[in-house]
Length: 159
Image 1 (cartoon, rainbow, N blue to C red):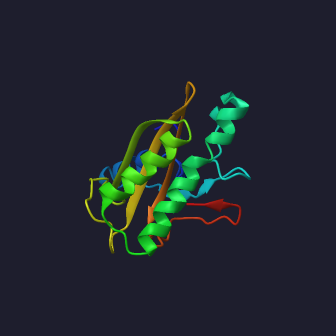
Image 2: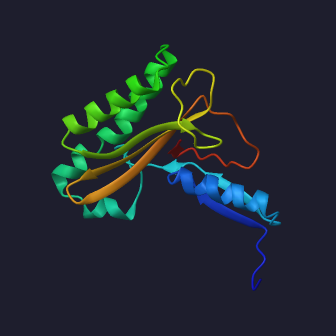
């Protein structure tokens, strides 16, 4: 090993990558602490990404629906809707209605990334990948989040 870091910091925007790295560090017993940081969002709610600048003005405005649809999922779950297929269909409907092309909408157990059919009382990841024009954007939200000691919070960010 040329470098032996004590800490590695990963954003939650690519949550699947974060979980793979955490698992690898644990299983291979690397002496490094993985710190996850919240998704940083633009003023309009779009997850920050270098790809955002590739969006046309119209696509940029329409892409706000991604974070809005994730917020709607959170509201529905808090209101008692827990069937994953209903939640996924709602996200797809909102995104396609705004002109986006859905690559995927998945709801999985946030710990092992396995698909779930019901989100009640389970920490779940709702992950989306969407095209607006030729630009592919990803975003996610954690439902029923559990606080972990290796997470940082940010006042200008959101999960």
